[in-house]
Length: 303
Image 1: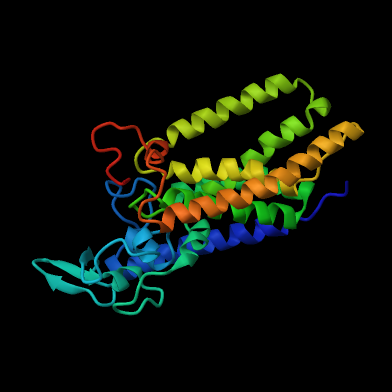
Image 2 (image 1 turned 135 degrees about the horizontal axis):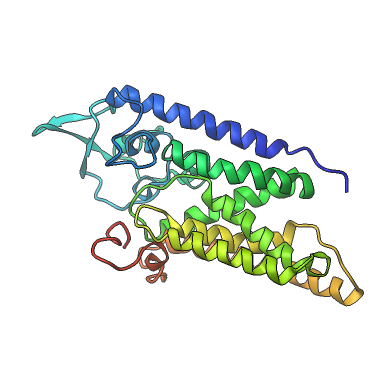
């Protein structure tokens, strides 16, 4: 097939680099430094306050988590900050910003979308963009911009919603979307099995990479739920949107059947993760163990 122009990946990458710069500028306005200390942010990036004000996923800004009159420690530069015993206190509307009115019920649902374009630091965006540029551009050339664009955004959103049900900490990054692309590559390996030289070798290599990277995600400051959610939804959306090669009429029927089934499964999965997040008694009590090992206080940021 004629290669497609990877317009989507170029646009997304430019936006992510621009938002990285914007977050560092905003952090400088708040604290006098473009980055937080290495002790607080090993990724060499801004404090959480700047990321939240630019649209990071932070559950208290999306639904009622704390009492309306509760105050939080915040930076001096944030609008509404009040000096209190040597620190500065803000209401939830001050912490969230982005147009939230004082006393209004948190409902910033767009925070499941905007974090895809934000990163916690220079190392974070560097790691993600290396994979995004090397692999994402090739996938878009092969499969087309609209297919990869839908999969990229859908898997990123699914990953953030999946992790939001049990995570108290803020989360940013396009890792969920990138794991969605990995899920598509995993799926494509099986769908094109007959065309691949040494497919078992390729499968073993891919499984090693997947398990190793998800294992690293168990470190307590990494949102591994976004990775797992992105990977699973990548397989599901890949069944719907990726073009396939059929080797027989029976193979064609199987692949079309899987596509139809995936439409219903994907719809149910999105319904389930949103219901789990907005329900106060969500059923996914075990989800926190996707993010951390239950050792000391590693799971403190998860319910």
